[in-house]
Image (cartoon, rainbow, N blue to C red; front, top):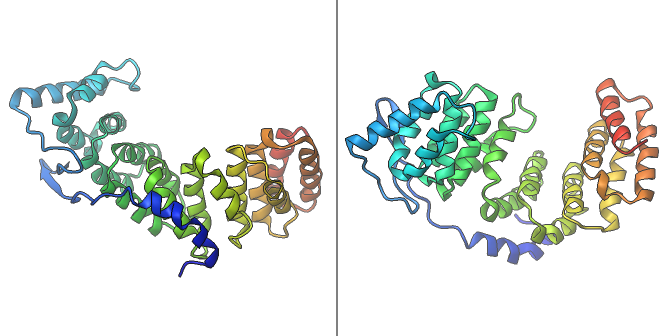
Length: 313
């Protein structure tokens, strides 16, 4: 049940939510053992003739020699071919024998904004053991766009537990960043349920928030009853240009917390907004950082020291 204070953001949520469209069916066919996205979400099924398929395969073979999309003619050629090339490109991405070239091929699909490839890329990213490849696959999925892609990313993000080994949550956030209109109200609603993983939704909210969302973030600070949510929102609001005193107070309060995780979070975020801190606040932060160093464990002490260096203390 939504808390009463959330009601004041109802109009913002409703406005963002009304842009949603019906999801395209997340159907995957099989061609030579590889997933091929179904057409949908504004993309017509593109049927390539034999000559076009041969050209796509030729460009994919040339893609293997590229280190990045910069100065890679094969990358540009595949993007220019558009939807007709997408099924072959997706099949290439699904084949791990192609190594790092799969990451480039995934970016081709993202650059095309080929929405039907989004859900298959999410599935491939979720099962990808290489962290860097996983990040590229999920980021490319986000770039593909489409409601079905957002739903796939959001479902996996909700399932994943904050603090689990690996960078899976970070990789999923890379994909979710492309969905401001849907991700912001979704993350806001999930964050305010009061569960123990609210901060992971605060991370998404901060990833997608734009200057127009600044006042919403400011209003939320202090109302979530979770410090590691409040500190994230405060830091993001400051980064977006807010100057409310409670934002500085929130970050500084973390350094005085008895909870080591709160102190660590506050120290990390103070580095992020060091340029937004007025001199008086910076001096207070340095004082509190020195005080927090007393009795700190090695990991916390290292984090606090990095913040002292950043703030000139």
